[in-house]
Length: 384
Ligand SMILES: Cc1cc2nc3c(=O)[nH]c(=O)nc-3n(C[C@H](O)[C@H](O)[C@H](O)COP(=O)(O)O)c2cc1C
Ligand SMILES: C=C(O[C@@H]1CC(C(=O)O)=C[C@@H](OP(=O)(O)O)[C@H]1O)C(=O)O
Image 1 (cartoon, rainbow, N blue to C red):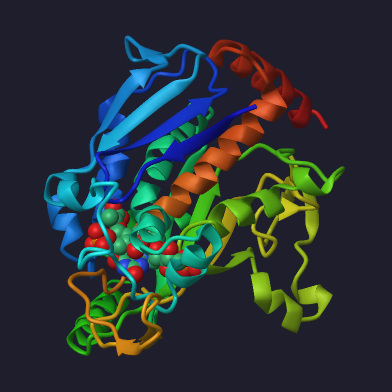
Image 2: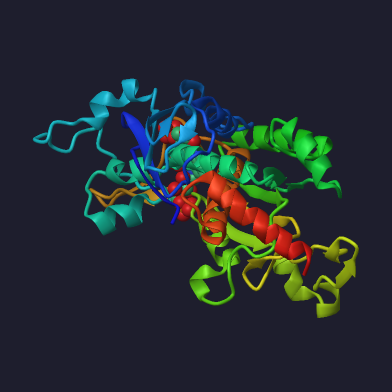
């Protein structure tokens, strides 16, 4: 089974991930992963931290000569900002609570609930790990999944649909969406909306506020039959929703038509089935490529809502953990909007989950074995 764990504090020395269950023989380089890491660092509206970091991965196990070995893969990404935080991150064990200790919980972050749960007097012990800095490793791990999917012609891309009140008009062809989003600073396929989004981000920053939005991930060329209806935890829609919902600040996930399906009659929601020389086909994809927790051969379409960033320059009311006095928070730095970055993280999360589903379906300790199984299955599907 493909799985991963990651570790690392936002301002610690490094982030680490261990991936197990990747077949042997998948061609992958650090450069390939670095391209994805760089995409996560792009986007308009991010704060000072992204000017410091230049995320680069280092393989310390599991990859040799440009190919996976079938053994656990260890990935390391160093935090450049650690140099500025070393003192804060390595306090003397005997130190009393001093001014470097964080006691002011931010509404909307893990600060208060995390400090209570883990019995921490210093909120830094919570925020370091709750931070979305961790998503750098998720993108690295997801890039391994993406590479495996590429070996089967499966393509994955994300794009920003909405930021704050500005909604993009999305072109009908996925190829066009992909092309326009790739050329956009905000990964948005509507150049006019992109301008308005930037203006809204600027205004939000000016006002000391923050913005959320909606992004979409699309996956094309998936085979029919990934996931299963037979058990709740094997349903691919549920697994993908968990993967995307676990991204910091994501508050809603939809597949295909999503919430809108609840407002329409069945005749306007379900995708009718046809049969031609190429086999079974649909003329619509309102289901977003999944029926009964199984891929149905149509493009997978998954959308998520991200709430606005919790750390605000405009102070929100909160209460000091130590003194119980109310205060209005002051902030040194924060992102104003991170929806484009979250879209890249979601691509990675979806890629990893789909790579898991592919390995489950086609098995194999090596890519060659997996490809043989895949070809045999595709031949079977063709003659159904
Ligand atoms: C790419 C990305 C960047 C983020 N940047 C910030 C940030 O600069 N400041 C902040 O307070 N929250 C930021 N967040 C959101 C918090 O990490 C998130 O709201 C927090 O961990 C609480 O989790 P929850 O919102 O899922 O409840 C970011 C999230 C993502 C995905
Ligand atoms: C470091 C990243 O995102 C961080 C996520 C984050 C948060 O609270 O989630 C807070 C900010 O960190 P800092 O407090 O160091 O400025 C973001 O920059 C990253 O995406 O690599």
